[in-house]
Image 1 (cartoon, helix red, strand yellow):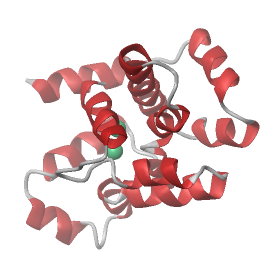
Image 2 (tube, protein in one colour):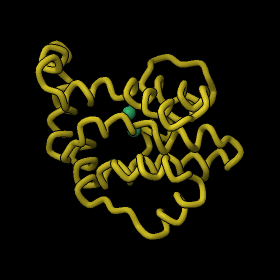
Image 3 (cartoon, helix red, strand yellow):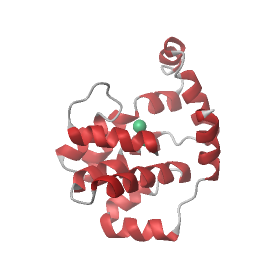
Image 4 (spheres, protein in one colour):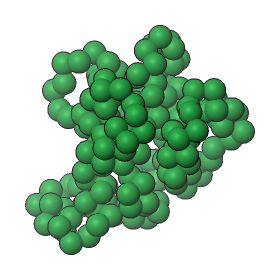
Amino acid sequence: MKRVKQYLKAIKSRVFEEDYKFLLKILNEKELEYFNRLPEFEKRHALDTCYYIIEKYGVEDEDLIKAALFHDIGKIKAPLTVHKKVLAVVLERFPFIAMHLKKYVWFLKVYYDHPKYSRDICREMGCNERVVYFVEHHHDKEVSDEGLKRLQEADKMS
Ligand SMILES: [Fe+2]
Ligand SMILES: [Fe+2]
């Protein structure tokens, strides 16, 4: 049921003028250009992750806010349609098959390894190493860094 809700949310998701006004305030030109390469539903997810952090933890941690916006930016290496994403998410339940297929299917490789691509892109954009650390490890298990825990919480809730 959770998957169905996620799917419906994804196909209905939109980015509004208010969101772009917000982005213009906090991103430089290069960052904005990268952000705009995400498909609409990924932009929505990134913004929601970012807003969750701001609402719950405030605006002090700028690295965390930036990491929230760019944690999934690696996915631009192989832009997913909602349907491809559904396939990738379902396949995740069968790790053996998924790990085998990702050798041959580029979008699956990008989907499963996106934290590494996000790390590379954040470095390319000139983000500091703390932002790079957050995005690279946002799917790690059993993390101890408080900022990373917050990012994972916000990601899950968005
Ligand atoms: Fe992710
Ligand atoms: Fe995410």
